[in-house]
Length: 618
Image 1 (cartoon, rainbow, N blue to C red):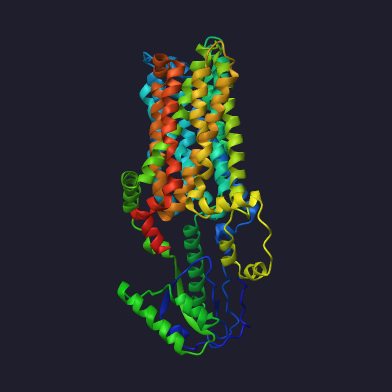
Image 2: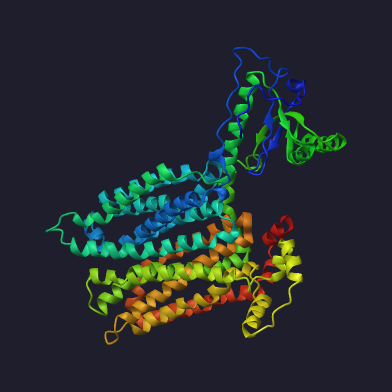
């Protein structure tokens, strides 16, 4: 906004001072009016002062930020996600050392492994309380406060000496870590439009699985090399201390470089800055703002309310203002205004928001078949991922005779799977956006000039490839919400394939590379499921997406936390092959879920109360 001076000349309403203050809704698209300055509004005196306008650049729409600014926030978010996933997997390798350090010493290692479960419980439930806080106060303060909890209780895990204390500390580590997974999707949605969101979401998803693989690999090496407590007393506790250092450095980077991305919060700050400036102007005697034309004024009046009227009178004033505006000649006009943000007025109290945030995910989970079956699908996939914390060391140590450190290297397969799966997900979205897959009618309706240019062209003769593209456009439209599931229908089958391969090839006479390939295939399948669920819920449920994602997140973390408790018992009692058959068969059954949605998705969405209400308001 240009800084106006006393020499500015404008046609001014000399009675601006007597005008009532009118409140208008502020959006990122709102064209801000100019203040009025001339002899009628403020006589020139030697002591007259014109308050300078505020700098509004910090309150710009996050979707219009420069790419480098978005990349900084995306990088910080993905690193934070990586470290929290690293934390979840790093607990398992030193479990026996943790057991020996506690007083009294637990009779078995299973109660110690419950630390993974309590971590997941905190990880699953905390966002229901913290998400409303991020909507009201912004992402930044929630990230910083939760990050402090995450760092502090990582350190507590390194000094606690009782099992109960360890389980509570791990629960609070999960609470602090949860925001760096569940709310990163919100940060990505803040900065990127739907059509731009797949690549950032793929990087985010890949960070989760890569961290889950690297954590147990690194801590297995530490636990093996520093596990001799007589030679290296307490050195194994660096499995905690190095995470405290990394997460502490991350939090410093967050405090310095992370910028608020929540749009409604930025708008509220912008409105406050403008209103404060208007008050300063009026204190100096400058009253009124100049609206350039009545057309812009009419558009603004659609969201206008009176600060002095009741709720019912607001709409009367809107109608009367629009009517009077249409009767007057277009031209500059004078108004005294204050800006408000619609989301602030519609937002409920923090208690009610937490109540809704805590109850709506359960309501959606048990009333929306799509959310129920997708949550079951992704929860099982996540359970398999957490199963690897126990299954990989158990199988490679007992079947192949590897040491703890050597078995930790097998987690490299998860890291490679995350990298390959992320690359595939980025490429798949580009293929979905291929010009020959996009329905030409959508392009023609969006660009009138294209219509005229294409109408004059002679269509090229169709070949075999064009027929394939035509079939894809007809039966698998790229604009459908189910387009998010097309590729996952195929890639998700890698999960049962990998489980069968891991189970049937984990034998002393078969080379270890084959079960490692099974782990790799499972990881690619898990990532495709994880990403498909995130993107599909965001596209279908819109404003209810956070509740839908909270439902699947809770199911995912509860199942993920339960699997490590039964891993060793299952493989010990069933054996590698039968355990692989049981898990692979469950994965096969759940792999039907995306196929059903692709086939009958529109019909199923047509029966959804939430989806129908969103279609009506769209």
